[in-house]
Amino acid sequence: ITPELRGSVRRSTLSSTGCYVNTVIESGRVRFRQLTTEDVDFVLAITSDPDWLYFIGDRGVKEPDEAKQYINTSSSSFSQQGFGLWVVESDVVEGDSRIGLCGFLHRSFLDCPDLGYAFLPHGRGQGLALEAVTLALRWAAKSGLNSQISAICRCDNTRSLHLLEKAGFTAMGKFFQRDVPTHQFFLTTISPE
Image 1 (spheres, one colour):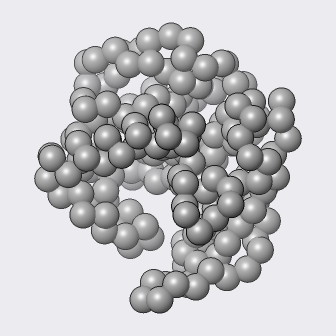
Image 2: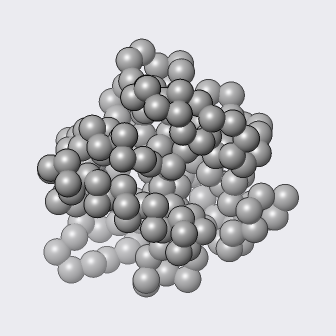
Image 3: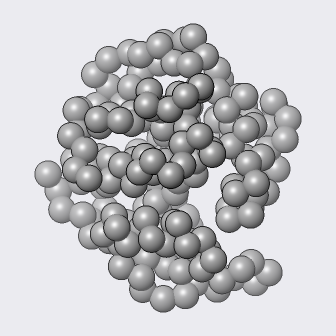
């Protein structure tokens, strides 16, 4: 999958919540935009999804105020780091076009941005996650982000392990933390466009 990168903040779109928001980048089937306070319901849905809770963990987002704080933290990441997590939207799914989150996280123990993504059930199994990850990596290359990107994935998350390999990541070894399941550590190198 080689999504066409159509630029940065080129147009406004009507989101599924009925508000206009800036589309940052898009490909054939997915588009990214920043979280807004109109996404509280979406943040509550994705952070309480059973796959999120099992593979990512409970982030303590259970109430609307906690979802707003999650959104504010995401916005702060863009202003402080130059990157963060975007809402992934797609019009090829039934129902809510907001299907997931994808982007980059700053982790104090890493020297490079870390890829993160999660999708709701209606956005899974259609290749949309791979398209979103590929689009995020294209954005990173175009934006001059660090030439290395990491990804950390639970060893029992076979769908994500496979996706990362298809997206060009190389498994570098196991990642261990106290009281946390073992994770696989991946790296990929991007070239500036």
